[in-house]
Length: 390
Image (cartoon, rainbow, N blue to C red; front, side):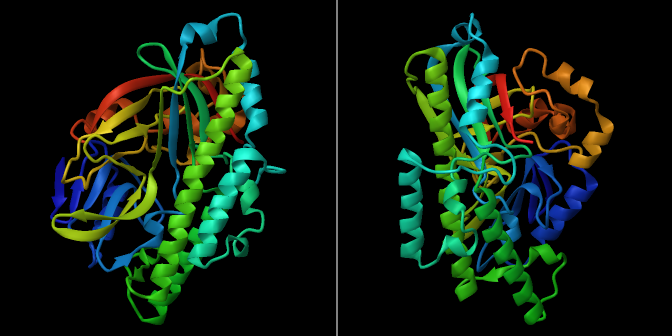
């Protein structure tokens, strides 16, 4: 861990100058307490650095959570072994089944909802009603978004651990509804800062002041979107479990289920004070708390347990972190390189996934080595099936 300044601590052994400068700017905001913590996977983001933990008193920065509120991971450990999946059955048919069960890609949603999905939507609708806001004002089709994956770095995987046990693993957030909620409150914060002649080092560090109506409107809708994201992952995982059960011809026994955010804000106590902790690309890693840290396509992912590192604000990295922008990755790498990287993994061979090639990301092994005092690795997972949206 490196003390860049009293207000900025860094766990990344590989840190670009622009990323460092961005984090220093965030750490200079007057309501930071006690310091910003940079995770090993830190890289440039909008306003605030992706892979940063930002504790504040008296204010929150909507862009410090980002536009995919509640984005995170869910994993289920099954009773099956790799041999049972690698036998005479075709993994391609399992992949195709999952692709059929879960709508993929941006703007792709369910046509109708039944069963558990409908109950989850009703739970969210009741919460919104109690909280006094209407998600319909953001997206009339928000209910149909529950149980959908999205695109970019969101994925569904079948993986195996060091004991050859099969895990189901997926990454997604609050979809279009969460994005619209985030954009609305980022815009509101910027408008208010302009109205009150508040000079900001970066417009995307605009903030909302605790105690104002605008602050509590944001917190209320943020919390709702975080619950949407959590239930979205639960719904998709239930569908993936169903696909596996049908494909293998037997019930899936869940040995373990972990569901965690890595883009979220919540109140916590640190260094003697109640603060709002915004984790933008970081997971909570209080002592004994399980968590999930995915690598990129074709690399390892990790099941971890938090060590409760006080200086890190009980946090750890959320993944590999990008080295190349999406456009730069598409220019730098080829489809043949992607095929070589994905050898032995069942996936849909598409040029659309070129920007997700592992070489576009930081080395996950380096990230995990940097995180040695933040989390303990309990399982290392490698992919055998990968599902992504275009």
